[in-house]
Image (cartoon, rainbow, N blue to C red; front, side):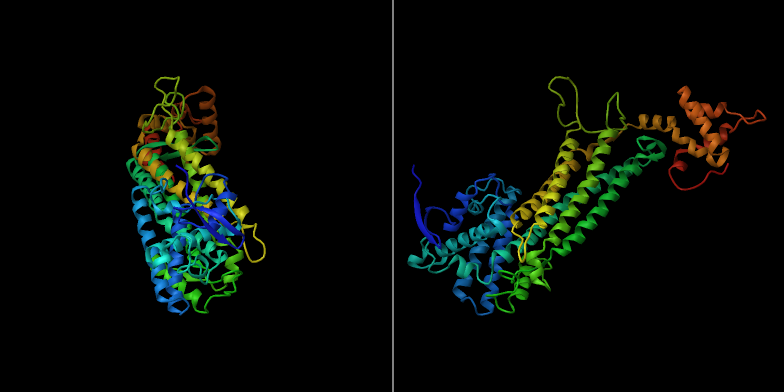
Amino acid sequence: MATKFRTEKDSLGTLKVPADAYYGVQTARAVANFPVSGLRAYPELILAYVHMKRAAAVVNNSLRMLDKRRRDAIVKTCDWILDEAARLLKKDPLGADRSGNILDQWVLDIYQAGAGTSFNMNSNEVIANLANERYGRGKEKVRGSYTFIHPNDHVNMAQSTNDTMPTAIRLSNLMMLPRLLASLDLLESELRAKGKAFAKVITTGRTHLQDATPITLGQVFTAFADCLGKARARIVEAGKHIQVIGLGGTAVGTGMNSHPEYARRVAEQLGKQLGLKITSARSIIEMHNSMADPLHFSHSLRGLAADLTRISNDLRLLSSGPTSGIGEINLPPVQPGSSIMPGKVNPVMLEMFNMALYNIEGLDMAVLLNSQAGQYQLNVMMPMIAWDLLHMQTVLANSMRLVAERCIRGITANEAKCRAYFEASMGLATVLNPVIGYMNAAEIVKRATRKGTPIMDELRAATKADGKPVMTEAQMKKAFEPGRLTKPGSLKL
């Protein structure tokens, strides 16, 4: 069946737009111009724009710049979109399948015109056409006829792409942040639970990939959890900086075509709508041309990814084997590991995790490059910064949750192997320093290494000048008591 079209007009002339589309002519031009990746904006960015358009209508009416009828039409339309989006995201948090939902009317590729003008107009046109259809009278209801609600004059009143997109970057990431923190908290709690479960499992520490002094497996996992707690604090701190917005600066940050009270009031209104502490920037011009705050937030996510990469790699090494590796821990098997080797099971959840984390670190570099690419009063790379940051949060949140539930929760300790590593470790010689001295202990280590015998065997064979044992069995038992070796204190025999 042939697609039906309507004809719309903009400053460049006329263009056919799909008759059933709620977007308009400017969006249609961008769809034709940028069929680059097939990727679309995250729902949170769309919702940030809808919230901004709603808040603008409320504030512009309170400042007597927009009449009540138009305010009500825009506000009710935005509320309906937000409700429809919530319905979709409840069953599909990623909003991957938007067919049949109003969010499918945001049709632009993530690679698009600089600054996000096309995306801003996509939002303006959808809201205008919906408002006209739902609340217009007579011919006002026709899609593409903007005699009642106009995309630019009313939906975009006192706004510009140049202040809405940087604000949307901030709002959308604040909206997504609770999901990220929930996944981070889950992963931290699972690691901390393993720390408690493995508190008495003694093994050997390793530095430079070589034997070091003893440590418990519980201490290893607790340290992982503590590390994530610090990363969380850094992310929360960075999030505070993106609570400050520059909406109201319009084109170059000076606020032209907006009421003097608009910037302050619209920030307050957005705070009420989103339940967040949103404030207007002291220097709105700076908010247009600097992406330093989103970049700082990006770096906090990269810091988390760096720690998670290290933790993931440690877990893969600790679980390596099962017969020819370290094998101190057992990962839960979740799928067969080989198409040719029967019975092989791979650390697939952690492999997925590493891939995701390396991508996060690459996206942070992309945010850095895009952030420094602004000129004068505007950064035109904002659409890419928006997508990169939201993608970073999404990938981190989902991968952390999956690893917590499908990997960390099911880890068990190979206690016998851990104990064997503890007893065989050359690092045990460190215990001897206060008793027989560093040089004498080093000689025992060299003999054990050369002969391939345990430290304790060589210690039993070692004698003083008078032929007496360097240490008695009772002294050795006290010196090498596992609980004493994994906390501060010096040996007193």
